[in-house]
Length: 298
Length: 298
Image (spheres, rainbow over the protein chains, first blue to last red):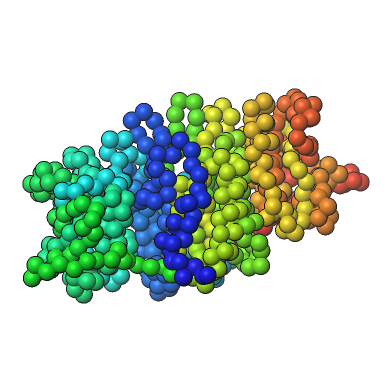
């Protein structure tokens, strides 16, 4: 049996079964960040994201944008948990033949974004590698009562998103600004029941919320905000690396979020009891069942 | 100009000049771990180490030992700062063609060692990669008054080590037990002025202590403990990935450490004023100047 036979999520499940954690861990593997005991009022968040040449970006990509992306994906994870990013370490796999001015561009993209978000780059490691690899591990902090996880969605919640969806691979995946301001506005002013950032795809990531909250959902095709790059509703539902926020809140809270008219939050569906599974209602009011599919590494 | 022209340390210097950190960072890049403000009595330690197939281990290596090593190198970094490891996240670059039972072996090596050292594996990331990559980021904690850095060595200090040196590449680099017990015995019972783990090589890593402490040193060839695998004194002085502790303490403290007769600590030299540089005294009482050379990735 090969990795491609069981896939990324099969492998993750296999690992998770074997892992033992102690009581200093509030939430281990299986969410956007690990949640660790920290102090009286706050938890610490800990996450890592590796990007690899030829998989997460092309060899021809502007390395300033690649460096930027390497950090941005972890900021997005911290944001999705309701937290504030603080520190990061950066492991680089580099070829000895790389031009130093190219590495400078990579560093510039990464450090400029770190500056913008007040993140301290506090260390790293450099190894030889024929393909460019960047792995960023990030620490953040979140007030206990503002922590958002994938679990917590309740039947009756409205499902909401930031931004629009589709075709991220055409450019947005390298240029997105992590939705930290939006996430902090949400957790500081409203009760958010569940939140995730859309990296695997809207349906796949909603699937994570549904599974971990033991609920079902209905999405309205006509409500999904499509980007100019979207090839259609199906593509928008599956498009990975959009790095928008996907969250649920009670109808009352959702109304208030919309009324705040701050940022661009949109309702796209509703949480239902688990037995409903996940359904999409199209413009003719017909429904279809959806599978939780998204980007697959293997 | 290519990376191989400026080398790993040239690149690190280049990065370090551009990095800005705020007051929540006690010590950023440039030591075995980053040191972060944590609570009244303790600092948090944060480190990462990436290992890559073909560079840090051969394709034919037992993956149980590879998984073990991936975690062990970070434990060694936390130990060298006088701390206790607590949590880790693991980023994996894997080929879809890898056999699942091979990945299971890798996971077993890593998780068994995590269990032995009470480290919580709290998350990770999986990416596609033709060559196997494992990057571990680890958090630890250290009491403020027990923190050991590369800086702090003083003229008159004795230079001491754990274990023996030479030929780590023949097997020790995959099988070493991080010197956590030894490090904790040292910081709990004595005043250690500077400490590092030997990953680049004895002379290269002593060089890090000397530079960051603005001191010189003399090593006595006859005192360097040679392993059975050592090819001779020169090889032992340059051998990377030995993962022994190298530390300095005042003569008085060093005497007490030796008298404790606990573990296997050995004096190998003495810290001198900076102007002496680094000298080696051979068995005929002749001295030679040493350059701070060790393993080079590029």
